[in-house]
Image (cartoon, rainbow, N blue to C red):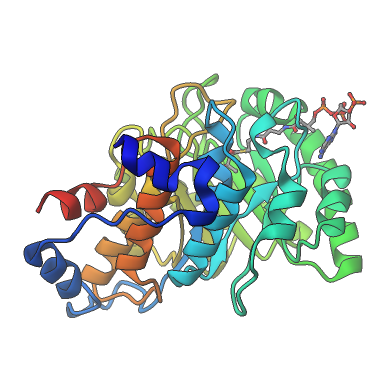
Length: 340
Ligand code: HMG
Ligand code: MG
């Protein structure tokens, strides 16, 4: 391990080689066999857009500073793996989230690949203006269906946050910049407990009416179950067309893949996930990482659903970031690929 860390560790970036555990023939055959081979059920979408949130949602929660060049290399590896959207960083206060304080350098350093979007989080006009200066072409605003979470996360009530987001939206419209909207705590809140599906639907509707082209429904602390997901989606779909919905599942209780499958059966075709299952929210204690992108891709390909993602290259990206952070992957597929 020490030797590997020397090769891929932050200090040796220039000469870093990706650690790629030799896949045994059984593992390689299994990965090949899930490449969009199954007969697809008619109730599922033909294609799913994966929004990779690892570099932002994944790394924002790391205790030790992740070097900027490691973040950039990760983003580049993810774009090489075929991810169509990679949330690159966030333009939030460095006092609140120190891990994202190199947002400008990240935006300037990444090698933009044609056809790939690199959205960034902007909680207010100040963040939006900084994002524009750094060359961002798409932003995301992030609200919540829980008052207490909103206060802890962005220091204002839900209504106040929506007023701030309207300012961002006006500025974005002037610049012709698309805006994505998040609703956090859609299946439960770390401070308020149960969250009403109607409240989720109300906030989603307001973000959509404001002009967000897509609304990502976040199970921020990963407490949801397929039953709760169905109930919540039924309420939201009355207010926002399902084509404009995405799901963003953290995997704290191991329910994320089941929740995603239920969302697909409900017509959702955009899924957020994080390479190696990195992440959590600094203002939602105990929340684990997002569902691992590798596991989502494996499931989708097994269902015959196209993603455009190259799973072996994605596994390389997961392996790179785990070795850089000296941590174990949370992806079951990555774990199995090493062991098989
Ligand atoms: P505030 O303290 O209320 O802001 O924070 P303020 O307007 O009173 O300003 C206070 C200071 O912050 C001032 O600086 C401002 O200039 C500065 P000072 O005069 O003290 O030196 N400031 C900023 N600096 C940089 N960028 C900005 C910015 N705005 C103000 N954009 C604020 C309000 C929103 C800024 C703060 O609460 C914040 O940064 N929160 C970020 C929280 C965060 O990033 N959480 C994680 C992302 S959300 C998430 O993970 C959930 C999600 O994944 C979905 C899910 O899982 O459900 C999306
Ligand atoms: Mg999240």
